[in-house]
Structure formats: structure tokens, C-alpha cells
Image 1 (spheres, rainbow, N blue to C red):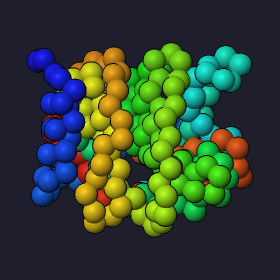
Image 2 (tube, rainbow, N blue to C red):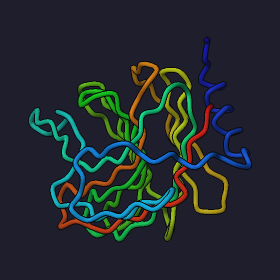
Image 3 (spheres, rainbow, N blue to C red):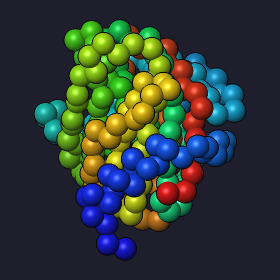
Length: 206
């Protein structure tokens, strides 16, 4: 399949108009399960623990951090996944989001990161080395809906206030086989930890 940048963005935009997505099936595993968590249907509540993070090499003296919390299921083929998240962020880099993972060296996370007392749309694509992209969400409070769309090796990251149209903030390449791990993530790299609440997690074919 030949995929253009325009096709990917238009396709992701059209997905926002889809009236119904299937609820995510019960995830099969935890990576770095937190001490405190509760799962109910398509929702998840947890306390992100201090020092948890996913990051590799860049500006970290070559260190590889793979201690973030990740609640996932295996997904085959292209997909659209959405979730609504709300959290009691407090420290810089407190973060929640959706994650697509191949292995410890190849993954993407996209969601909300707390920086300088404000929420930011943040995404990290890791192909051995992690990159990072943040956009301040001026005046945003309360729940935020996140979306990740996979089309072949391309992932598109979307954000929106609950009940409003989502906007796509990033498009990126990630080398992936047919099957990947898809799920919910929360990290507290520098602070004491925080409470995070995910609801209405949904997955459908793209």
C-alpha cells in the first residue's frame, strides 16, 4: 500500500467522525504493574509510581529507562484507538497516554505531559534513541481524549477536549510487524507519583 502524508492525515481526520468504536478487549498483560490499580470494563485507575518512565539514550547519558507502567493487549494490523484521561498531575514530566510498543528499543507514546504547571500534548517516537515533542495546551483543564491511528508503519497522534473535535499533532514512522502491543501508560519520572484515570478505551480496525 502506498501511503501519502495527506492520506494519513485525512484518514485520521475522518476517523474522528466515526460514530462508534468497539470497546477495548480485556488487556492481557502489564509491563511494570503499579502497586495500586483497578480495572473496570474499558477503564483503568492507577497510581503512577515515582521514578517510572520510558526513555532511551537521548540527553540521558546513554541510560535506558524502561520502568513506566504499561497496561496492554496485542493488536494485529491497522487500528484506531481512543481513550479519555484525567489525572492529578503535580510534578514536571508527570504523564499519561497511549503507547504502541514493539520491544524495549522500538515504541511510541502519545498523551499529556505536565510541564511548568500546565498540560502539554506530548509524543515520543523511539527507534533505539528517543525523540520528544511537546505543545502547550493553553487553558486546557479536565479530561482529555487521546487518539492513535496506525496505517502500516505510520502512527498519527490526536488530542481533543472531551466532546470536541480532535486535532492531529504528530505523524511519525515506527518500524512494526503485523502485531504490536497497544495500551495505556503512565509515568512519574521526577515527582512522588500521582493518580491517573482512563475511561472509554476503544479500539477499532483502521
